[in-house]
Structures are given as C-alpha cells and as structure tokens.
Length: 391
Image (cartoon, rainbow, N blue to C red; front, top):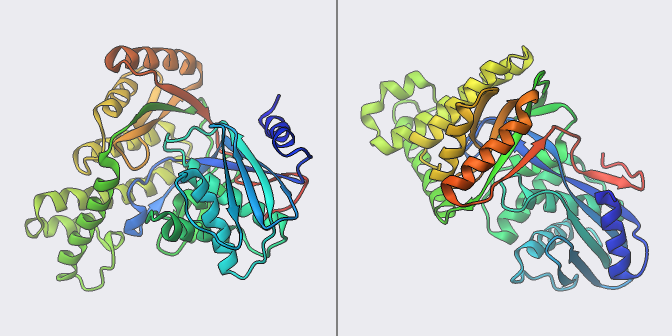
C-alpha cells in the first residue's frame, strides 16, 4: 500500500466518507548555507522525497477536524474562534487557517487525515511541510488565488505570529518551490531565486539521523542572531553601507578583527565564509564536481563546529566517521545544530555498506539507534489527487 492509499483509507475510516482532495507536502534538505538565512545571505535547499500526505473533504460545518495518523492524535478547531492549543502539531495547522482569514478568505469546515514518512525532529522540516501542505489544501479546496511564493511567505508569517518561532523563509520556500533534480539558490534578502542542476553522478545523498536534540538549540539560536548583529553594528562604524553580514567581505572582516570580540569575530567569520562556500558549491554543481562539493561540506562542518559552535558530540562522531569512510565525498551537520541529521555524499556502490557501518558504530558509541534515509530532490508540495494545479 502506498502512503497516499494509506492516508486515503485512514480518512475513510475516521470520517466515514471518501476524501475530495489529497495534497502531498515535501520535506527539505539544505545542501550548504547554514545560519546564513537570518543574515540575509544565500541558502541552497531542495525539496525531497520524504512526504506528508493530507486527505481532505469539506464537512458542511464551522468546525475543522484533524487526525494525525503517525502519532494517532486528533484535534478540532472552531473557525469562528481560532486559538492556539497545547498540541504543537495542531497549532501549525491552525495558524495557517488564521492567516487565510486575515487575507479575507471565507473558510468552511473540513476534515483532514494526514501522515507520511517525513521524520519528525530530524531537521528535514516536517513543521514547514505541515504549514505549506495545509496552505495548499486551503488554496485547492477553496479556489484561493495565491501563488507558491505567497504561500511560503504566509506560512512564515504563521510561524512568527501564531507559533512564535522567528524562522527564516528557507524551509517553507523549499518545500513548495522545489523542482525535481534541482536545488534552489535562494537569496534570503530579496527572495530572488534560481535553480541549479542537482546531478550527483556516482553519488547520492544519505541522511543519518542522530535521534538526539539538545535543549541548547532554542536559546543558542537567539544568541547567535544577537552575536551576528553585534558584529554588523561594529563593522558599520567603518562601512556605513553594511546592512547585514551579507554585505561583509572576508577582507573587511580581517581588517577589523581587532575591533571585534573574539566570539563575535568567530560567528561573523563563519557566516561570511559560508556565503562564499555556497557560491562555490553552485559552481561545483554546474560542473558536476562532486569531490569539490564534498570538500566544501566538510569545511562547513568545521566552521559550524569550531566557529559557530552549534554541533554536538553525537553529530561530530557521525561526521568524523563519514569523512574518513571510503566512498564518502563529504559530510556535515545539517540544520540549526545541537541534534538532528548529518548530510552525506556517498558513492552509490557504497551506500548500503556505509549505512550499516555508521549505524553500528553510532550504536556502539552512544547506545542510540540512529536512522538512515536515502533522499533525492523532487517537485515540491502540491495536490496529487484530483489533478488540481498549485500554480
């Protein structure tokens, strides 16, 4: 049974009728460009073939009913009184409906069953997939005239205003704007973007989930934002045109190293260098130079570990293991840090051996059962049944 069939059957079992619409929402990876988004830099994400499926039908009421199949939980929402509750997953959906009401869209009650194979808490943006998936449901179910980029921005606003998470735009943008066998070079200042061919030749992407998440993640994220802004404030005294670290060159940074506190310098150096690595990574992909791409990933991990200081012992172990494993071009921690996944470029003929060996070594080192996912770049979030365009 396919995931789509499973969720369709679940909908029938929970709500006693067939669904009218099925939307498939995509997770995302980020090849390179970590912690550059809130510094108005570049990121290089792709939508991936790990999905959340939504089966939906109107119910003729003013109530929306939700069934989260993977965790077997339910929630209800009164469309005339949208309030956050104590179920975080439900709040991601509620906030999207509130945003459409703010746009003046007249919503009717509907039922939703959803689930899939996108791992929660893995750093592959299940929350963003939930948001843009629900926004795509509303667009299709109520024939709302809204484009893909506008959906990404609406979902980001919902995270900011309803969930209270001051996230960048990358996750939502990648989930809905992804294209098969492409990565997105996204300018986080202007939201201009272009597509880079993602042809890995003899390699493929393998994610290794550490299955850990350290409590430092949320507080340290805010600290990093402040440290970067502090660097910008100091450098602006010498270069008044600087708005963010996006505008700073490595030469400018080195010239004023003595003016920056050591920690602030390290944070700024990582971000400025990471923007440069991303542009070089795009060139490497254009030339299908996977060895160079892997080297850049290794350098990014070194920067995240030593300069930005957002790694963790478990992630360092996974990356160190991969970087010394035959057939791996490069490896790094992916995402905000302190847990989640490593991203690895592995030769196709070594993938199965690599997965078996790294999972075994990780279990022996930390007594934690990691997980591995082979992923590919695919088209982003969209209705898959019936054939409704997401435009």
